Image 1: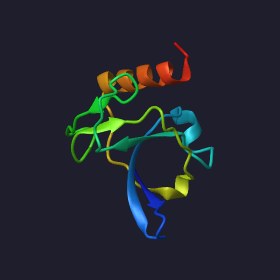
Image 2 (image 1 turned 120 degrees about the horizontal axis):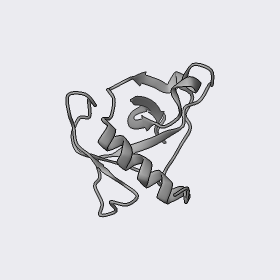
Image 3 (image 1 turned 90 degrees about the horizontal axis):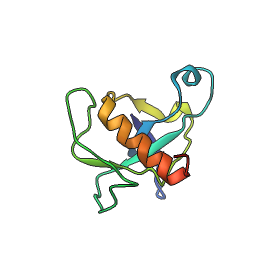
Length: 104
């Protein structure tokens, strides 16, 4: 999804993110638990799985999911839904989260 994220200058910036919480909470909670995406690729595959654009996910280009930078924006900050990650990408994001949070 794409969020409106105020910058230090006060102007809105785009922030791409993956929503992590269960669907049943999406309509009943004022915030979303998210994992931000970055176009600045680094060598950290265990914590920042790389995601490639596809017709289903709507990503603008190669990105990494930053499992080490979870955040909870208000639902009203969502500007648009880009798409859905496929099962393989979701599994890699889940593995990164389990490792970061030591849930494995």
